[in-house]
Image 1: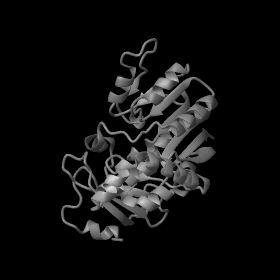
Image 2: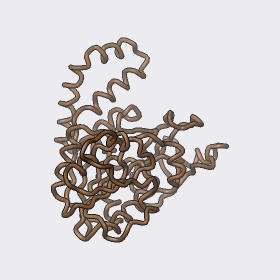
Image 3: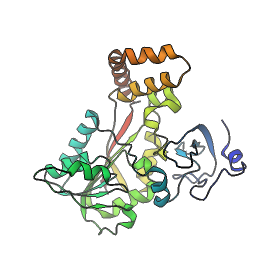
Image 4: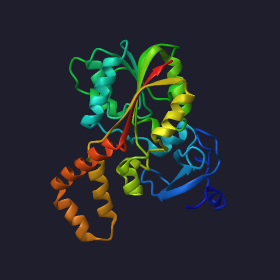
Length: 309
């Protein structure tokens, strides 16, 4: 592991649109480098470096963008959201617990969740720097109208105090440059007893530990942070929410994709061909591994339901 201070001394390591920043949770300025990866969405073709905080253990990109304008430059059009059955079930459970109709969705992605909310009788408002996905989701939809979508951070949307009954960040919290500020703002706009759904990849999952930089949910082009149950609990405590429930989900798809990526990027052509040929068997095998990981508390994703205190 290379200390972050060593990278700071490299000429040209920091440019105008990103900088080395202290830990988002505890402020510790130094981190332990985990790995360096290419970033296909960066026009300058610069790589990304993930580090682990020596204080609280939070994993983050460093250097990283510190404002939404810079995130827009680097990641416009990208979305970490995947809508598999496990996430749909988590969203359905959250929708049943919302005490009203007005819902804020941060990171609309392909627009599936917003569309479900509209069809379920809710009045959602979206926050997304690139609403292309939600525009496509509602194009040609009969009997439903596209809700308002702000193309700006929630901190800049000037939403009224206590104006929403629920909020959702489905795999979007890790893409935000200031997750603490975002959750504080969500706390402000939620009514008393408002419910917030948060889903993030689990940085302490078996998949993350086994596949490391080939982990499907690492998403180096879009993700700025990765949380474990410990670091996510610290973030929630700092922002004034109460954890109503926390659970882990796994459906095996991330394991299968990680295995295929590992085989493809290896120097072994036979292994790559075997993975592609045995894909059906691979999915059965990885679903079993994902079930075991979830049973042992090391599932692929964390699903939190937060309540405003």
